Length: 143
Image (cartoon, rainbow, N blue to C red; front, side, top):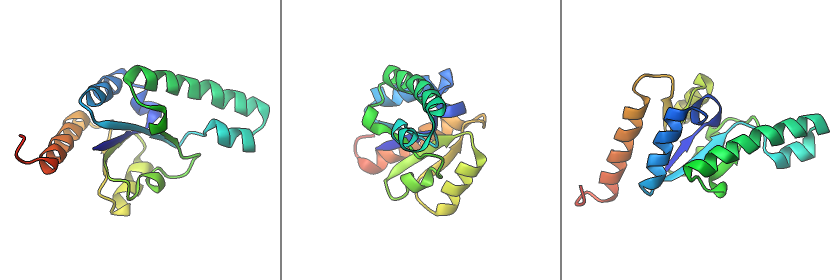
């Protein structure tokens, strides 16, 4: 079971970090999929000053990911492309984000991944419901 979180204004929030950590501890594959720029892309396309800024901001992302228990191979930078371009056909249950444009792109894609807005009061409840439904679908006799 895979779930996805944006980073800026989403996984950089303490309440979202705590929720993501619970999911990791429950054995759920948690990903960070962010429209941020990867260091590899920055090295190839940006000047030294911009590269330095990307490196510094991504180090904070990696620090938080390590604290939550998110594996480095489960972090994807889209380099300012829509997140759905990565999520599509990858069997993610939900993507939690604050950006309405990203959420609408996911919704309009018709991919089964459910877009969840972290700024809605019931974001956590919605995410938990989707996880419980997926657990049931994976093993209906276990619940």
